[in-house]
Length: 320
Image (tube, rainbow, N blue to C red):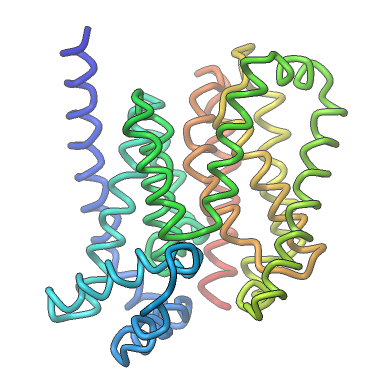
């Protein structure tokens, strides 16, 4: 049995490598040059040394909250490679490889990788480099069997992007409610379950608002219509409804709770006037895994809904 699991892991990594090759065969920056403004900030911040200067001589807590691990790590990478664009590609490739491997191992199928051909996920991999890499490390930690592997990976993800402290807390809250069977009680009462999750999402969104304002960080208050609109939030929410209708009777797992809370965090961020697209982006791998819970005779309906949605999203995104 252990050798079988190892073989499956190797197979998942091999297929993930192939998918990465296909994904990056498309030059997203060349085809959509105006859709990735954050990369300009990275170019300027790292080439000028401003990012590195901002985390020098900080105590360990401020260093962690300032995401100094990311700053020092990427600065060392691009100085070693000598080209910042190549460094972007290396980080993007590593992020996609980790996330793809997670989906392949969880679903035991390559079909869910189609969920990655979506503007929100492309943004995560190509532009939101910190979020993408932290996401890959987070999902790798989730599937790790040993806590000796989980905890360092979780902390590394959070040190690269501090928003993953929230996801780390969510994971252990899930384990606690599962062990105490609270989550079973909640999921048997759908109305209460969704009300509790949305109340939690609103609370977290407004807490995030206060925390960011306290440290004069205004990045989350910059909204883009294509990534943070209420219509987009509703569109993503339809996948929760479809999944609930089409799925089999399998008990909900962490991927379900992770996806639902992130969609609700996205919608709650809109009410709070914050940028919430990141929540959707990091939830897409969980949705990809969830697609395999839909029985084969109905799975094509779920895939059709996603492909149709992604096509419309691409048209709006490309012309925006």
